[in-house]
Length: 68
Image 1 (cartoon, rainbow, N blue to C red):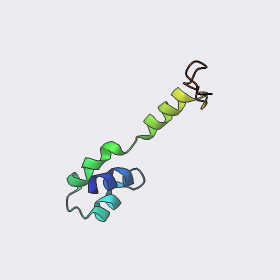
Image 2 (cartoon, rainbow, N blue to C red):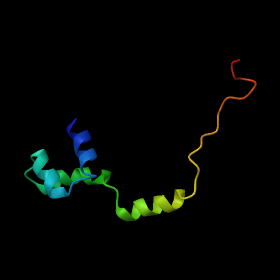
Image 3 (cartoon, one colour):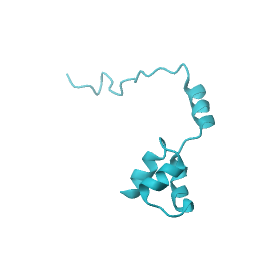
Image 4 (cartoon, helix red, strand yellow):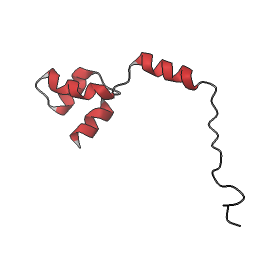
C-alpha cells in the first residue's frame, strides 16, 4: 500500500515533500519512488508520437460472430 501511494503521489509532488509525507529520514529511501515520475521530455515525446491519432476503437465483432 505504501509503495502504491508513493508511486502515485510522486507524479504530483516534489521529492522533499514526498519524503516528509512518507516519514522517511533519508532521501535515498524516497528516491525508490522516482521511477514512477515521468520526465517532461518523455511526456512531450509521447505526445508527439500519438499526435493526430484517432481515439476511435474498431469493433472486434464481425457479422459472423455478432449476436442478432
